[in-house]
Length: 63
Length: 536
Image 1: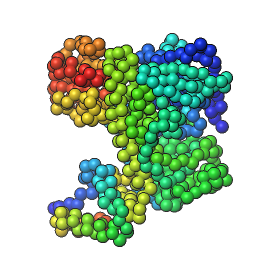
Image 2 (image 1 turned 45 degrees about the vertical axis):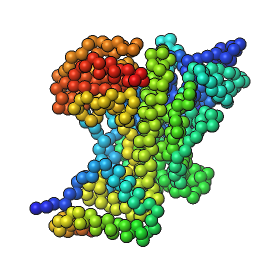
Image 3 (image 1 turned 90 degrees about the vertical axis):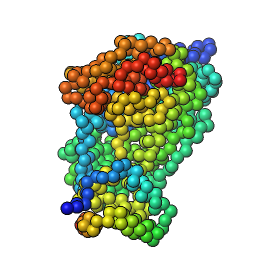
Image 4 (image 1 turned 180 degrees about the vertical axis):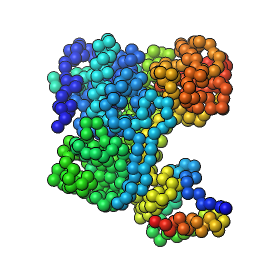
């Protein structure tokens, strides 16, 4: 069965995080929220697998 | 108050230069007797270069300042003959804990692989670091090495010429003029040398203030690095706790931008902050308090004719990551062997341009890392803070988010990828020893590899044939013949061979790899030697 990856999986984590922050540069809060929403949907489509997506939603909700 | 701050370490004494009928010319003058200036002077003196250090003060630096010294720095200090007392006195640590709000979110362990002579990090007050270096200078003097430190010698004017530099020096007994073939400016972030030469220093200013305090306490906090994001005792800001020798603890509290610095520095304002952090019952004594702001910036070039800038005078970073003093020692490590070869006429003057290329590469890497840490610690927009807090929340439950938490990317040695001194990689070997890399240490029975590679060009062969010595363009390269069997822990194999059967490495005097191949090939290595000294 497919399993959500929750161990480090991004090569160059600092570079990725810098890219993410840079994408928000110069945006106001509403624009940034909208960017994040679009980003979630783009990534969700890339993943595709509904089982994984469900696990990801649950992981993000747990605090 | 610690007596070490009171005692003049290099008290002013009249120099014969002050009574000479004409200005005396020295081979090298170093301005600044901090860790970087002292490292430069020791390195040069060990190679027989005549060097004079001028400092406007006569004591060690006040307050703990730089406290985290990395493995590479200790390896360099070992080559300079002063690592032992540093390691003996320093506090070794490898656990870091990260707190968010009122809870610990995770901890990490910096313990590297086994098989290094020196620990990953030690914490040691800068004044001890300087003290041990001054003791090393005294030991070299006792052996007759041409090295001198002149306290309370303040450089007031600098004249630059094609073949020398002329300095006007102010002392308690008036001023005098002195000359040098080469000048190394290690006079710190506010470098008077840089100002006198009218040189740029551009970069990014971070609008934030940090309260830095050294407290003496008998507390049972462990020897770990503790970092807090948004803790109850310093809402919306960060905090850091780190142990130093002598029961001194370093505390860093972020204060924000709009504060009254003089007011925040007063003990009646500092002590309640510390009590909120440490607990009401903890007894402590304040040793040193300061408030700092910082910038991430560098000079456009570190070499200006016969004037070479090293350490904070050339580049400045945020303190997160311990990349200040640690990168300064990598500067002098890179510079001194080149300067020696140029002084001897073995290498062309242009070899010094590679100091610029290689150390600007290092400075940019440090600035990038420390800027990113600062952006994480002090988010500059609402969304940046939301993302940061999301990373911290996730890091408590999921391992994947931990590499994204950035409370400082701790100093690692710089690899000079793309340096004009490197030859193309001709070994299918480990990435960590590709050309440009600093040689990782490895155990050899009761000894270690790095001391065998210090201060000269070396042809390191591991299960490979080569001549015992090569002479090329006035450079003598001696072979160090090893076998994977010399290290039963196999660290030597892991770090230098990988899957290769054997390898030949050309190692520079600063222990960086200049070239490597799977076997010895005379033309290729002669070419590599010429390249490494700037003759190709």
